[in-house]
Amino acid sequence: MHETAWAKLNLALHVRERLADGYHRIETLFAFAEHGDRLTVAAGEGLSLEIEGSFAASLSPDEDNLVLRAARRLRDHAGIDAGARLVLEKNLPVASGIGGGSADAAAALRLLSRWWRLDLPQSDRLAIAAGLGADVPACLLSRTARGVGRGDELTPFDAGTSGTPALLVNPGVAISTAAVFRGWDGVDRGPLADFKEGRNDLEPAALAIAPEIKAVLAALRAHRPHLARMSGSGATCFALFGTEAERDQAQAAIALSHPHWWQLSTRLR
Image: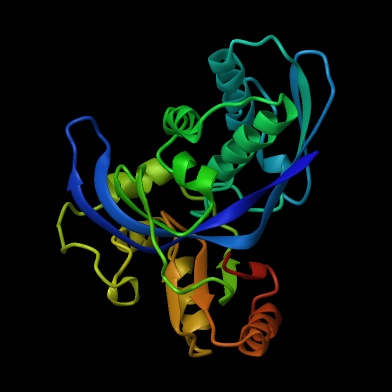
């Protein structure tokens, strides 16, 4: 049995306030790609995790891995003593602003709910997800939604983007989400209304850490997409196109000029 951990995009991300507990009040529009990591489960003694795939070397399958933490919390919440052997195919770069770890944890909650045949209400799974990280509830749903608060207060939203051709590009730089949020200048630039007219308020702080992001955005915008923006805390950027041919042309040109950049050619769910 397997589950996809779909890549997360922030079509816009407005930071409104730094809170006393160290978190930030944000407004964002989440969307998800049709591709991502892949999590597989089989029978096993206890809980175990193996990691393979393009970015396996970037992660450790130790007890603190978010997938195992999600599995333990789900098992404890259900009050069961069950095992599972999990294998994570890590296709998405780590610490890249597209929710890799959060999406993997959310996939574990969905997958193990089926594997263990748990009849838990969605509200229970969302509560478990919220305890694992601010993006995990959105990744659990993996549908376009507006997020406020820490990003975990979710409202379904029809942005009219389903099926939109998208290109994700990362320059090969891992960025700490915490470091980027610490670098936010503290200026509230206003609420999120239309995501197309929105912004990512974390971009200046991310650029200070990874100046390569500027080149990625320039490369994407050179192909005149409908929208090009950094996702989350970076360094992955995305572009939305009108046709798959336009997307594929951009992908080929960027691969030729920047062969070491990671790319994902996909569509929005």
